[in-house]
Structures are given as structure tokens and as C-alpha cells.
Image (cartoon, rainbow over all chains, first blue to last red; front, side, top):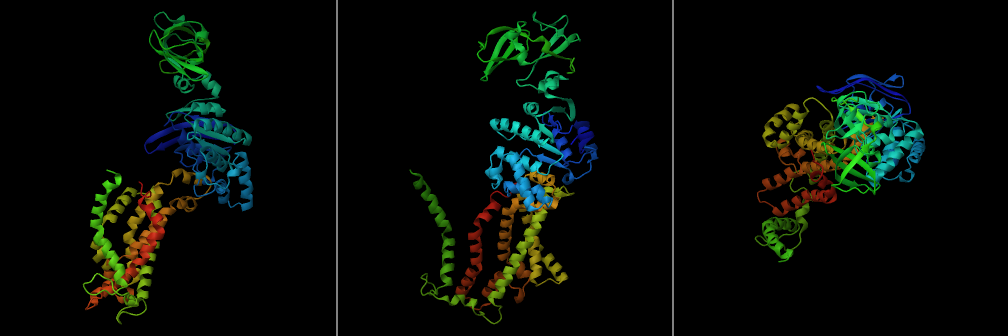
Amino acid sequence: MKLRLENFTKRFGALTVIEEMDLTVESGEMMALLGPSGCGKSTTLFAVCGIHKMSGGKLYFGDSDVTTLPAQERSVGVVFQNYALYPHMTVEQNIGFPLKVQRMSKSNIRAEVERLADLVQIGELLDRRPAQLSGGQQQRVALARAMIRKPDVLLLDEPLANLDAKLRLEMRSEIRRIQRETGITAILVTHDQVEAMSMCDRIALMRDGKIVQLDTPEQMYNNPRSQFVAGFLGNPPISFLPAMAGDVLSFGQGQTLARPPALEASGDVIVGIRPEHFGPQHGTGLRGEVTFVEPQGREELIDVRLDGGGEIRSILPAGEPVRVGQRIDWGVATESILAFGKNGDRL
Amino acid sequence: MTANARIWPLVLILTIFSAPLVIMYFYQVVDSIAQPEPGSLVPGAIDVSNWRFLWERIDTGRPSIWVVTFNTFLFASTTAFLVTALSTTAGYALSRLNMPGRPYFLGGLIILHAFPTITLIIAIFIILQFLGLFDTLLGIILVKAALELPFGVWIMKGFYDTVPWEIEMAGVQDGASRLRVWWELVLPQVKPGLAALLIISFLSGWSEFVLPLVLAPGSGTQVLATYMNAVIQDDATADFGLFKAIGMFYSIPVIIIYLVFQKQLMNIYGGGTKG
């Protein structure tokens, strides 16, 4: 079901956390609310599920206005960061609790629980208690419990934060699979850009209570609207260098790169170069000294200090003969250079 | 030096200091079933006549021990249930509900808990007299429960504080009312606190002496503590054997409760009082 936030404002006392935010999540879409801690993404989530009252604005599920509806009556399933399973109940009782509240008959509850348990693949764990489950299994139980009421909207609050790296990878695709299979509208709150990019159809990147860009992951990565967005997405992160835009981009001490074709501005700019766009395969242009080499198995991460000052990162396939202290003269894929003005806006 | 050798001096010192208590407990047991010669430490013949209070009145002016025991049980258990029931709800409110004056409530609780009961006794006496509850079991039950409440509320608040907020949020999101969330999801998490509080306030009621002595002095409302007091005070020639036997009788339930519920009692002093 389509979800629409209109002029959403949230204040805690005198402190305004979110002001006049608009957000539309299309039916069946998975939307990421991404941002650094304190940007208001969890506040938004809690307002959607009804735990926080909205200080202003409207919330619609489909065409119905649910702004003042209490949390119990909103058709929303939530998966909390620590899963919030009920420790004294078995997995079956946990998953079935929302239906028990609805006074559904025992046999119907049993059938529904089994359907959900199959969906999240925990059929054999129904008699256990949460304490006897691994983190990934608890996560699946929490998902099943959130989905059993067939809610209009599924909210996920940092669902992978408490898992180890391997499980995180597994649950990432699991959650996406379950969301696709059921076609449920979902909002994922996370501070991890990899999670947001790999799991979601669209990302709303938030900062200081505002959405700074709302786009598909590819668009947001390749076409960021500001320096903040460019810096937030990408791992290893993008490098920023001050440059002078004339006929060419000059970086001081005679180092120059060709102008990116799309760049119209001239004068002082800040240039963003992603690590995969800087390296020997792109010719020459930037000279400096390798200060750090970090092998990562398949790839090597290389930090370079440029002669004119400034640090730039490169990522190369493993096996390149690069050593710390080595002098290099590498080029940049100029069509992929991002340029920003002094205020951080994209040029 | 081995670890054992180093520990012996410590054990010796502890033994010397606790010996008087141990010896007294030992003779408490022995003397209740023996009739030693005056001035002698040898128990002599076994004699259960000290326990005669169980099957006959020790003198005509006194109520039967069973009436007194029933009074004590009624007093202690009713107090315990009252305290636990009220603390369970009040503790939740203080832990979770954002009500006006909450910080003052919390501060007040600590002050009340630290307040010496005895300084209130005259005021309480006047109130009970006014309400017509003086010299009734109900009167001292109410007073005892009221005085135990601050401790109970504080303990229960501590237990509630350890229950994660998210469990309640999840319950609300699953469609349950606040009341149902509390009853079905939160209360089970604080069961250990509930059990410990029930036991502790029962034991506290069982051993209460001052309140019944002052506020319910009549023989109809006598509890074991005041009964013992009367036995030792009134007799021209003190019968210490009898006194010790009654003492044993009085403490047996306490010992049994401690043995049975050790684990639950540990909770309250162990993990429960965070926050």
C-alpha cells in the first residue's frame, strides 16, 4: 500500500527534529531512510508506526488519513533493532501473538504461524524460546511476527545492526527476498549505505531532519546532488580535492586533468574522484607518493599524497606492484569526475 | 605458604567472633527439648514439656497458640499481598508512565524508606483510633502495608527498568492495549521481583513486633512476637525452656521459607535493583 507523509514535523519540547518533510513510498516499494545518527530517520519511523505522535503534517496509508490513529489500529509491522521478542514465549507464541490479540481461533493462528514460519524458514524452531536462538534466527522470528497480520507497511529499524558480518550478508538478501515475495511496502532505516544500496528500490538520504536526496541507488551513487551525498555513499569513500577550473582542471604544481564534459562552471571548485576512477589504467595526470597500501584480498586500497597537497584514494585489483613510498603518476576517468561548489552543491 | 595456610588465621578470627551467636543458636535448639540443671551446660534428659504450649494453654489468661499463629499468618500474608499488588502497579507507573511530579515521587520514596517508623507511631495511633481500627488486625495490616510500600515500589521499579522498551513498543504494534501489554508481556519479565517481594514482605510481617505491640495490644489480636513478649514479661518466675521452645516454633516457618525460596530471594539483592 502506498504511504505518504505530508509536511511531517516532529518536535521534542522546543527542539525541532524534523521540519516539513514530504515522503512518498510507492506500493510494493522498499525505501531506505539513510543518514548519520541523529538525522531523524528513526524519529520518522516511529511516527509512521504511531509510537511517536506527529507534531504537524499528515500521514496517509493509501487514501486513508491515519495521522491520529493509535499505534494499535495502524496496519504496520515493525522489526526492532534488538528484535524485541517476548522472552517468556515460544517462537510459535511470539509469531502468533498479534493474531491472539485479534481473538483469532487457535487452529487458524496455528495455520498462519506455520505459513509465516515457512516463509522465513524457521519451521523447525517453533517450540524454542528466543534465548535458544541465534541472532539470525531471532531476526527471522521478528520478521514473521511483524508480517503475520498482513500489515500495509513493514518497518525495519536497523535490522542488521546486531548481526555478525556473514549473517548480515545472508539476512540482507533474505529480507529482500521476503519483501519481494510478499510485495509488501517497506521502509528500512539504516546508517549503513551498503545496506541501503543493496536492499532498496529507492533511498532517501537524510541530514539534520531533511531529505537531501531521494533517488535510486545507482542515481544517487553516480549523480549525487551535493558533496554530502557523494561523501556518504561509496566504500571506500570518494576523495575530495580543491581544483581550479579553467581550460583544464589544475591541481597546482603543473598537475592538470581534462575538464569533465558536463562541467560548466569555472574558477575554484571542489572535485570528487571515486577510488575506482583513479589509477594507472586511466593514463597520467596526478603525481604523488603512495602513503598506504591496504590489501583486501581481491583488491588493494591505496592512499596517495599528491605533490600539490591533498590525499586521494585508489582501488586496484590485487597483484599490482605498488609499495608504500613509491612515486606514481596516474590518471583519472575524467567523465566520472564530480565537481562541487564552495557551498557543497553539485555544479 | 599455601593458600590454605594463609586462610586459617582469618577463619580463626571469624570463628571467635561468631562463636557466641552459634553457641546461642545451638542452646536455643537444645534447651527447647531438654531440661538442664541450673548452671549446667550439659543438656541432661530429653524433655518435650517445653512444647506443651502446642496442645494446652500455658495459663488461662492467654489465647491458644494456634489462634495467635493464625493471626500472625493472616497479618503477614495479607500485608505481603497488599504490598506486592500495589508495588507491582505503582512500580510500573514510576518506571514507565510520564506523569507529573514523577521525580518528586521517586525522591519521596527513598525518604519514606529511610524514615524511622517508630517516630510515626503516635500519629498512626491517633488515626487508627479515629477510624475505629485500633486493636484490630485490619488496622495493623494497613499500617504495616503502608510502611512496607516504599521499599516494594522501589524494588519493583528497579525490575521494570530492566525490561526493554522495545518489548512494549512491539506489543503495542502487535495491536495489544497498554493494559494487556503490561499484563501479558511486561509482568512475566518481572516475575522474579514479584516472587522475592512477596516473600520478603511476608517475612517482614511475620517478624513485626512494634506495630502489633502498640497498635493492637489486646489478646484477641496477639501475634507470635507479642505473644512471646507477654510470656516472658508476665511470669513471676521466667520459664526459659518454654520461651525458647516458642522461639523455635516462631522461627521454623522463617527457616523453611528461606530454604525453599533462597534462589528467589537472591534475585532481589542480586540483579533486580538496577536504576
